[in-house]
Length: 237
Image (cartoon, rainbow, N blue to C red; front, side, top):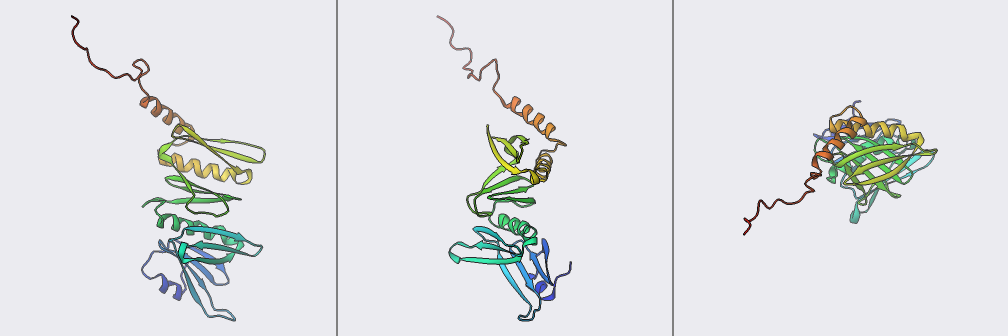
């Protein structure tokens, strides 16, 4: 997709990592540091480009029948609101959130944001190295949790009538949350693929077997009980 001349000039030397058509000639472009929204010529306005930096502390979304508002909180610098068609809000939110996570240092260099899921007051971001979870009315803020795939020793999915439970086992404890069944399959496949790819296995079963073997190797020797060896000790008198 070619960029309009004014938008291309605003992008400058930065790389465009995502483009989203907004309809009516309007277009959104995401760079590593900014999200740019191009508005074409209209009856009451000339073409323009609005810029939204990725140094964001909070992201909120309000969706109506036709328009959705994405509110970006910049702390003491106030809020900025980006208006997009409701049918495009998830297409816009995914690269925008990826840029914010990168700018805030949540994701590292070379880490890919694979997919974003929004379920009422639960937001899940699946990356190539971790799962980012946020609970609350905001899509993202400083109250997020992250689960690194390197620390996972188990991943399971429990089917329910209305929702599917996702069970993560890490650091000797379990983390459980639910996703609605209409989106559960997509979440299951996306998360399982990311975890398996990270660990270099072809299936969750292989991952579980490898994790169990690693846990067994790192466990203390059952016969020795983990006791410290003090040597032979002094000779008896």
